[in-house]
Image (tube, rainbow, N blue to C red; front, top):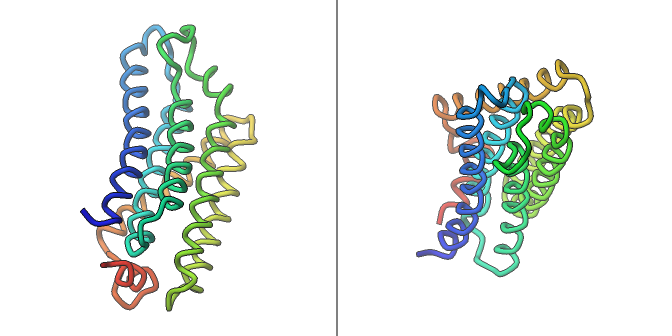
Length: 206
């Protein structure tokens, strides 16, 4: 096992637990859907959190493969992954919580969930910038990450602050659609070797 594989097994385990929490909550909500109305706000939030975790997971694979293992890297990964786990755990109520429509739980926890996601992405982008600035295409990648983060903060931050259902749906729905489009395009057109992302992946390959 390489140093990166050791780090990624720990990092991936924590992120995988976040997805597991979301899947468990979704199954529990579907099971109790007659006694506890689900609505559409919580499912949309759960879908967005799951896609955000997957995006961050992929980003770690691309950016950190060439880094030497260190205790600091392990702690940094743990902090970010734990932040995602806490956010995911807040999306659905526990079995011990009073039975009520999921919309009530959503409005009580939505701001905290999205705030944690913004924090995790800010920390992640700081790590990505530190890694990529020393690469040949580092400046291009840094600008790309900064623009993506700006879009993220505007959409997710707006969704965190709004009290209007339609505006939350529009903002998070738009970002969810962006994730889906990016996922489809990454399958149809993987990064070419002469693009900044392709160069970064090539440089990160041991």
